Amino acid sequence: MRVRSQGAICVFFGVVFLSLFQVSCKETEDRTIENNTALGPHRISTIKIEGYVNRLFIDLVGRSPLETELARETNFLKDAQLSVTAREELIVKLQSDTTEVIGDSSYAIAYNQRLYDIMKSRMLEGAEDGEFSALASNARFTLNKARLNGDSIGVYKAMEKIERNMAVINGKRELRKGNITINQLFARMMDNEIYDEINMNTFNFVNASFDDLFFRFPSQNEFDIAYAIIANNEPGGLFGGFASTKKGYCQLLTESDEFYEGLIQWTYNTLLARSATTQEVVNHFENLVLTGDFKQLQKEILRTDEYADF
Image (cartoon, rainbow, N blue to C red):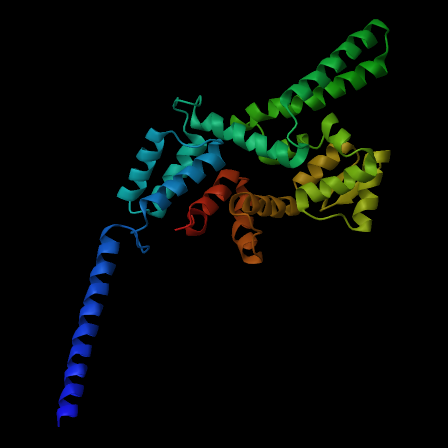
């Protein structure tokens, strides 16, 4: 009987201890939630929200937010319970707001510069604008000399060089004003002397143009057609269109459906450090082709929990 009583007592105290332990754990869990360190719907930590704001600033305007900007935008998102609408509002603000801000002329101008820079990084190994200006300046000297000598062919070639190189620099402003599309700026970033120097000779140019835009190399048939267009000015058909000059070839590639697929893949790799799935490409493709709205493509990615790491 005595043994049984001791056993009962042990069981009693074991139950009490387990109950107290469970209560203690529950209280600890509650305190954790109250301190806003637990992750759940609308209860994301402040540090995570600040990280999201910081990433948006870097990816869209090319810099970290100032302390005042970080506090303002973090509080804005928290007050809106991190709604998709609030995220989109912040994204559009960084892409398009023309109000003058400290550190930038405006978010819109900073966004345009950032996009221009990452496009040059993709296509031109980050070449500086001064390099294009120097090439154009050299061509102007050649132009004046050709005019004095009555060399009409030299005049034409020099003018073409000036136009090709200055088109890249001028494209930044024209894109911001909506005078050209992102497709046209990509075409200009292939049709210039620096791209020619990076990818010397027609063989390399054709392979590089496919790889840079489509993330693949051309088939033998595509290569043969492209080579003939560029090297011999022979009319050729690619992607449902025709071209007979190098300039026309660049335009043909950047107006193709495959260009838009490549643009989607590039944007996913830039913002999420991964390739888009087939379904994700399908989800974005139709609207991107119809509208050419690259900002909308970015917004659809930047507003996601995956990008925000929520």
